[in-house]
Amino acid sequence: MDDFQSAEETAFVIDEVTTIIKEAVEGAIGGNTYQHNKVNQWTSNVVEQCLNQLTKLGKPFKYIVTCVIMQKNGAGLHTASSCYWDNTTDGSCTIRWENKTMYCIVSVFGLAI
Amino acid sequence: MKLENTYRLEPKDTNKFQTEQVEGLLKDILESRFENMEYDATKCAALSKDLSKFIHTRVRCLGFPRYKYIIHVTIIQNKGQSLQISSRYLWNADHDRYATYTFNNANLIVTAQVYAVYFE
Image (tube, rainbow over all chains, first blue to last red; front, side):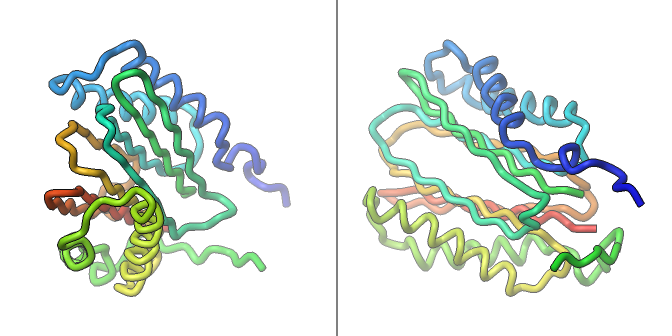
């Protein structure tokens, strides 16, 4: 009996997701300087843009997207994730982006249905 | 050895992920661990990994069956800078939940999120 879908179509492809995240971040905060009153809107834009593009891939996945934007102030930040899932089908991707005034860290977790 | 799935489309009412219970758990863990802690770059790197594994074990011990978990922990030095964290999800709102807690003291801010996704 044939598989209903080939392995490539239902796997979490890190390269594709990396491209999506980078484009979303560049598009939302690309050449901007840190502004406290806009950061709320920026994080929402980044996350929503990522989620929209991921949905367009049309894969049978549930997604969780997290975005952290921090002003460059010399302060330290550490982030860690721990996951309980199926290693063969699920995956995650984290991208770190920065410019002169801020850091942006985006994590995407994809869980197969 | 790969086992075939035994499908169950939704959790029994008694087995649904309880947000309040997990938020209480996160509150206890973070408050007891970080009560008077200072920020130290070398220690906090290992501490964040350790904390996420610890929360992971405790949440699994609560025993909600057929749930997959993602635990996300962030430790930030409190230096008066501005920070924004957002997350969005694409999931089944009936069964999938998240719990979050933020702890801060004079030196650092710790935030933990637990996302629970039901596996059919």
